Amino acid sequence: MTGAVRALRVLAGPAALQHLREHGLRPADVGVIPAAAGGPKGLILNPLDRFIFGHWLPKSRQVVHLLGASIGSWRMAAATCPDADAALARMAADYIAQDYPHSPGKPPRPRWSAKFLAPN
Picture 1 (cartoon, rainbow, N blue to C red):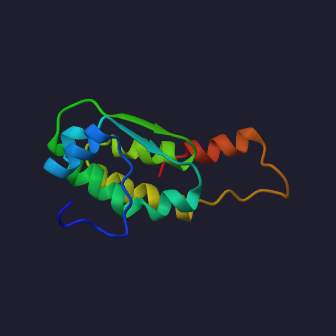
Picture 2 (cartoon, helix red, strand yellow):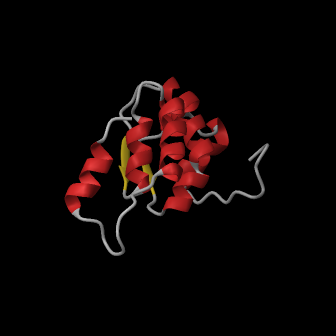
């Protein structure tokens, strides 16, 4: 591949690899995006998410299936907002700043729900 990034390893079948060699990766080629759970992974990917969902992927019109768990589901939900770049930036900032003060142990559900559902 010309202009290949040496730090990136692409695993693809023969047809997909040929397509990438001929065309590169285009927004129209994407049909599914999985998002991993685990706070730090989701946060470190925020700049890439903001580019992909805020600038690159909107150039296409096909349905893209989004899959996620934990912070991955929040990332994918933010990605569906009309201004995905801003929504993803806010999601990361809010995720970092979240605070649920409570007595030692697991907080009671009503308190957790009230904190989560409180207006900004």
